[in-house]
Length: 404
Image 1 (cartoon, rainbow, N blue to C red):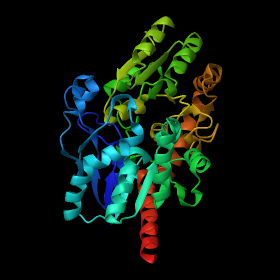
Image 2: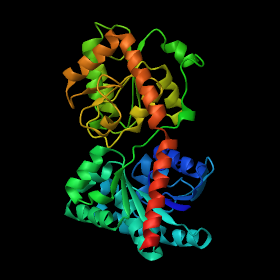
Image 3: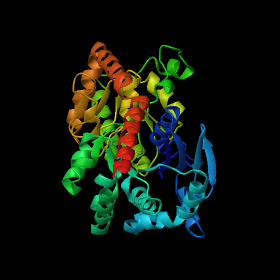
Image 4: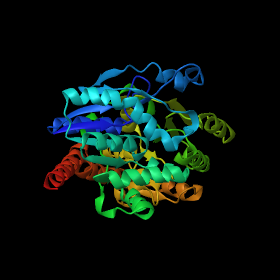
């Protein structure tokens, strides 16, 4: 089976962890017999746009073709505006930017199916390609489409509706997202849930080798979060909860991995709460280094209230860590309260304090919870399992197409 994958979320020289979950799935699809070409469109950065910020300057440095762990990844440019201006037309802009490249790829690689990650702009672009090449289209919804894009304006919602109507099948990465999709657009008969997974071979065992990092942290109770530093991730709630717990648990250490627009506000909050000695801001790290920090953490806490799924929770669980997430989010597909993790009330510091205090005060139960979570993830939430389900869906789509 030959697949054309379109995803603006993919690792690049600009950001090696962006869309790492798409890359992990692609690698496993290849391992299980698929042939894959990836097109990862990048915003065009002519003068003066490339001087607007470090992010836009970095886009200009991404090569047109790269090879990520055996995967051919093309990075064509397309017109994209800062602050999502004219986002309702982004699918058309992306299509114009990549159609020549896709035509060249098709001449040498007659793909059987198009897989797009997110409906706008990638899925809209893929919808236009479907019409040209008469190939079936599968669109995966990760969260942005149904939690942000659908609320931007009527034109964005109309564009999403077109994609949902034209896609042969839609994959939602959580039951939460499927419920939103059915409520907003219908099409329940063509929406299926396939949760994201983890790369079991990338896990680092705390018991395997105590690194310098582990020795440094061994005298602390280590709380970890990994995310983009945006308001909805709830990092500020972790800090406020820490401030209430440090007297009872004086050996606390909170490690924050990630970068984003809230960084300075979070630093200032840590200072105001007199937590500078307990809190470390490590910035954006490679996936490998993130896994090292996962290995030596005691608790993973990310009280985010806007998560389509949250593969980072599953990675922490796979490392044997008890996790704290929020009620009502995508990760509820995996976390059973009190069994494989804890769920706090969204935007509620008191609820978060209670969850953290329980795990810190009951280390044996916290460890047992982490072990139960690890067994569950390794049995059911690996990229191997994800790819098996995804390939089965592809085969069904192709059979349905042949029978029409």
